[in-house]
Every structure is written in structure tokens, then in C-alpha cells.
Amino acid sequence: MNDAAPLTRPSHRIVVGDGITAAAFVESSDLPNGSILTIISPNVHAFGRGVAYAADDAETPWRYAYLLNSPADDIDPDFAEWITQNWDVIRSKMEGRQPDWIAAASPLLASGDTFGLNIPRAFYGDYMEQRVARVFADLRAKDVTINFVAQTAVSIAELDGVITITTDSGAEYTADYVDIAPGGPSTQRLQGDDGPFSAPRLFGNEARIAEHIKAGAEIFCVGSNATMLDALRLCQSVVAEDKLRFVACSSDGSIPAPLIPRMPRYLTQPKLKSGHKTAQDFLDDVWQAMQTARAAGDQMREIRAGFRAYFIDNPLSTFLPDIDEARLVPRTLFHWFRGGTRDTILDFQRLLDQGVTRTISGRVSAIETTENGARVLTTDRAGNVSSYDTGFVINCAGSGRNSTFDPLTEQMIADDIIARCPVTGGLAVGEKCATRMSNVRHLSPATTIIGDEVMPMPLYDAHFLRTWAAKSA
Image 1 (cartoon, rainbow, N blue to C red):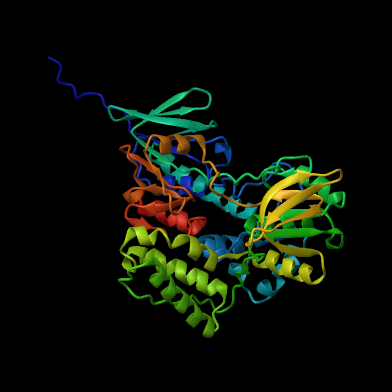
Image 2 (cartoon, rainbow, N blue to C red):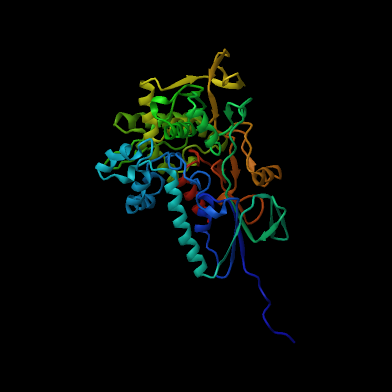
């Protein structure tokens, strides 16, 4: 008679993704001793960076051009400390680059406020890689086996409690638990945005766009968001400012407010009423609180960061219990709390005064190719169509109704494992980011509903994503 204990296999967790959320899932998961962790992502070699904080492998003028959208301590207080500790390295890498980020940062540096810097995003990627390396070292000390699969996950299935992830190569990986951390949806496509004088997105097309910038073409951006500001930084990194011609087009012709840090640090302390019956009642309350803060001298950085902290501790359901009404809130709050990189916005405004940059209001309906450039067709609120001849068009419009997600997320939506909210346009998951498939979590920058809670502010924020990933553990 064999009285030996039955053999048990080690627990296996798969994490799909390579950015901030994927890293937070790994960091907050209490993996048992001797378990297995498999990370699946095309860019798994740079785990923790994701698309947002990637660094070009080759030296390019724009390698360190793109800046964080928020001051460093808004992104992560530990990162702000890292900047101080690594300042000599950062300074040496930024010397001699254009635009002169060191000079722009000098007022904050003079006051000892490195925490307030809008630092180049690639450095945050460096910080994340170092942080992830420490997490991996701790896991290996627990005899956790870590596997890296440089492929794209395209489908998921479950049978008898075993979850199978299939990749684009046809390989299958089975696990007991799966955490899915994809990026956001694709940029909404526009008719004619992939022509000889247009690009459907900024990132990945920099070399081609740079050739047109250097040739003296006017650069026309569809959208006036953070990506448009990145496009301006690309231009500034390639040619002198007196050689630039730059247009930002959006429905209202406005650009985000600069997030300007001040010393001493202060956050707006909102106090909202509970028990609102409608979204409009709640929004009126928020607007009044914002106006009160402005009257007290608070700027957008204090207001935005203050409300963000407030909503982390006080969920939207506290103030607006009706989830159907709550779904009407995020789009408006996104516009109200829209802020961006201090350096680039102030540059845009300065160059606007010099006639180098300009803004146009209108909704772009199509892009046509002309003999020497592009023609942009726009429609105003009254339905009137106008056309603008320009040099080169970059689609910076962000996501929209015709945007798509990564293949795995699209399959999960089609199979009703997660849902796409028809009101917010974002993704809906269960409590603690659970899906309708057991032991599978999903969290994306596009997630707008978690359980019974509507996210009042978008999760396109490293701090928000890490907070919700930790809450889901």
C-alpha cells in the first residue's frame, strides 16, 4: 500500500502586459514560495516601461524629448526621491539637447524642488526597470520561477479550472491565475490619416515625421491633448524654434492647463455633498468646489491632484449612488481636470505669441493629399465645412468610437468576459478587477467601471493604475 502524499504541482500565474499596471499586478501579488510566474508581452525585455515610458534603443534627438504629463511627485513620491539620487546622471544625459530642458527646469532646481519637475518619461522607465528588478529578485529569493514570453496574447479560455492563454505564434500557456494589463484603445482613425503627408499616430512614426519637419513642412496635429504636446517636443528636438510651423486643431481650439507645482506643496481639499440624485447635481457640486478653490488661489495642479486624492479615498458612489447617473460623470470631469506638461504648454503659449504655433477649432472629418502636402477638412458646431492646406498631418485625436483594443481584450469583450460600457465608452470589470472568468483579472487605462464603482477620473495615470492594481490584490 502506497501511503505517500499525492504530488502537487506549483501554482502558476500569468501576467499579460509590460507596463505600469502589469508591474503593479506582479508587485502586489502574494506569489507562494516555489510558484511560477510567466509574463507575456512583445516588449517583455523592458517590463515595467510599457509604451508610455519606453526609450528608443538607438540615440535619436527625441529620445528624451517626451516629458511626464504631471510633476514627478504626482506620479510617484518614490520616483521623486529617485530623481534626487540620480540627478547627476540625468543632467549629463540632458546637456546639449534641444529644447533645453535643463534651462526650463532651472527655476525649480534653484528652489530645490526636483519633486516638481516634468522629467523626460524615459527616466521614469529607467526607474520602473530598477524597481521591477528588485521585485524579481525578491520573488527569486522565494524560489519563484519567472518565465518571459516575447509574444502577443490573442485569446483566453478556461476548462476545469485551468486557464489557457494562446499567443500570436499559436503557443499555449496554462495557469491557475491570470492578470491582464493591456494598454488603452487605439487612436481613432480618420479618413486619409495614413497618406504620403500624414501619419495615423505619433509614436513609432517619429523618423518619418522628422524628415518632414527638417524639410520645413508645417506640422498639423489633429487634437490638442498630451500627444499633441509630444508632437511639439518632437519638432523642437529636430529643428530650431524659428524654423517651426505648428498647428493644433481641436473641437474648441483649447489646450490643456499647465500643471505648475508650487512650494510649499498643497492639495485642494474638496468637500462634496453626499446623496446627489443626478449627474448634473453632482457636477454642479464639483464645479462649485473648483470655483471655491480657484478663488482661494489654487491652480490646476493643486485642484487636479487634490480631487484625485479625494476620489481615491471617497468613491463616486458616496456622492452619486445611482450607477446609471454616475456613468454620465467621467467625460465631463475629464475635460474639467484636463492638465498637462508645464514645460511644453508654456512653450506652446510662448510660441503662439511669436506666431510659430497656432490653434484651430473644428472637428476634422477627412485628410486629403495635395501635390505638396495635405488638406484638412473640418466641420464647426454649425455644420460648416472649412479646409486648411498644410504640410504634414499627425493624428493625435486619441481614442474614439471606432477605436479598438488589443486582440485579447477584444476577444474578452466578444465573449462577454468583460464589458464595454456604452455610456462611458470604457471597460467594465467586476470587484477587485475580476472578470466573468474565475481567477482572471483585467485592468486597463481604459477601465471606467470596477464592480459597482464608476471611475470619476480616467485611469490614464500611473498613480491611479498602481492604486487600483494594489486594491485588487
